[in-house]
Image 1 (tube, rainbow, N blue to C red):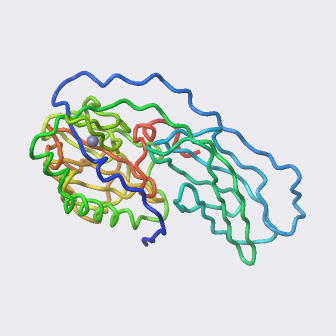
Image 2: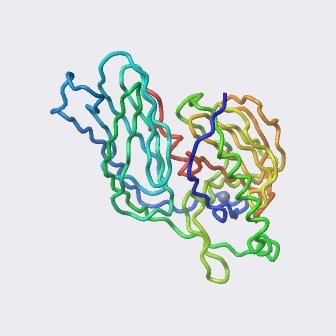
Image 3: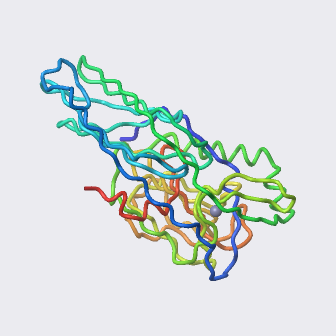
Length: 323
Ligand SMILES: [Zn+2]
């Protein structure tokens, strides 16, 4: 069964604009490592088990979160008698589901758009049960992560693509369509794998600077330089939810991993799967190409969380391994 989510999707159409550094083997200089935020747990001691309505007794959040990154919210609520709760979280104009189990343990995975301003923002937690309702607001600090610039000298063909508003709108509409629906529950392993063998040529979040000095958007994924025809594999288990051509991202495969998580594989020369096909982690789904807005063969790889592109490399670490 598929569900529709009421989400306010933040799109970065121009962020799909790509460039590749061909077959060069050196990797973009990396930024200094930034210390991962500490996770804190709030104990709310004054709430007793005898309270009439449901109440949150523990809530775990990072102390701060970087723009473009993903984080977990976890906690426990208490309630009287048997009940079934349905929860949601509103954060940065996006409403996403909060999973609550029969023991009152709840969790959600949330992402911050890469260009989001730093500051303190509200997270609103809402849980409905049978005749019961729980509402809680927390403040979290968003910090801007420093991003490098990515210089792109556009060919006339590439300039034509970026100045064609009908193509840009078509790309936005298609992406909006495949972000509207997703499998309700996450499937497959929590930890993703890299989709291709090759050096990273453009990191997530790099700011585009064009030959005329104008700025484009932040890069919405990670680029891997690889020869045309190199195998592209699925980062995790899922179902093919889109296959086709996008004006900017070229020939593309998008896989639904459930729970609002999609992965996209773009600029392909060949697609080797069909719409609705179930895919295992590591299964070949296409071949590296140079289709769409691209200066050479490479793979543009994205992960979207409720329509928001977030840093895919973070998902290949053990941060998202289920307990
Ligand atoms: Zn790219």
